[in-house]
Length: 168
Image (cartoon, rainbow, N blue to C red):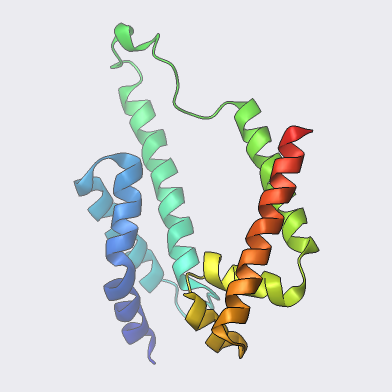
């Protein structure tokens, strides 16, 4: 597949999702459309650079462009914020919430590491890759019932580990 057709395919398949991703964060469809276009302009300018995961790279560019956009807006509107908004609470998570979320992710990762390999693989395919139980079974070369058992075992283990950690 040529680079041009690859970029076209990437655009056709993912531009709408990227635009929605950006619009949800900026709350402006026009700016989201502009930034989405900017992403694909930058991707097309990557003369021969090897990008292992172009979709992930596009989302990283989207996040960076969103940050750049917010920085630019902050500089332009710094003095334009009415005083009645000074007392509004921030919607950004506080450091305590961030630390709690990181600890929870660490507990999940540790609990997943305790799972048998086949069980973990079935769970990841189902929950992270979005495959149905039938698709998991086909991908792993096992029966649907065995895929269901692996996924149920993983869910039970994770729930138990997280409940135990929460009660401590």
